[in-house]
Image (cartoon, rainbow, N blue to C red; front, side):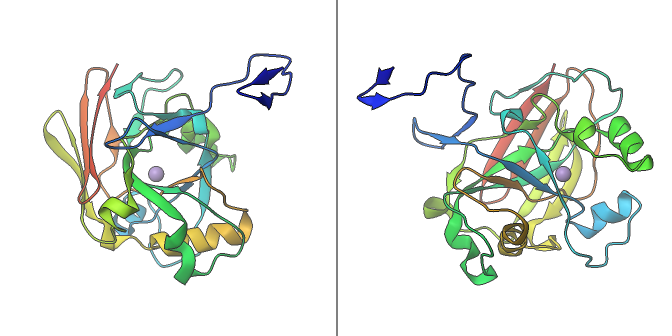
Length: 235
Ligand code: MN
């Protein structure tokens, strides 16, 4: 089969949609390849989760690319009674590679967005207690609401600025990008020592203290200074 003059492969089922994030101020979309998320990247959040915030090597888990959701609606997921918000800055890569030096890392960044790492905390807690992987708590459908990407060409590379989340107008989470234990260039460099990074990869950079549960009907208003805002309703 040909489309637009290109020979297209003959898939045996309909090709799944490419997950994508809107780019602010344009009609264009950023296609997503992989989603990496760092754990415990703000000391105050590590403490609230019962961990020592000393600078241990970073650790990452992954969400599914099709879990990124720009719709502004978060359907309360099944099989959980304790779904938590985690406000985070998302970093989108326009290129990648292996063993990227810290000093070259920001050259691979396309842009930034405000995102939520929604978490089935009860299921994550059971997984942790049993030494099992975290996907059941982290990688469910529509688990990462995300706002439009702002390009680095437009806003630069934010390394300081307030990160906050309000639920129904009440301030729940607050921190500053400058409190990240592992900075964005360090995260990119570290990940690239273990994975080959590429254009389309998205990194969620961790959440400040104050994570907590949401209920159906809640309105979450997240913000990252210099990046933007994200409003999401829980359905
Ligand atoms: Mn998180």
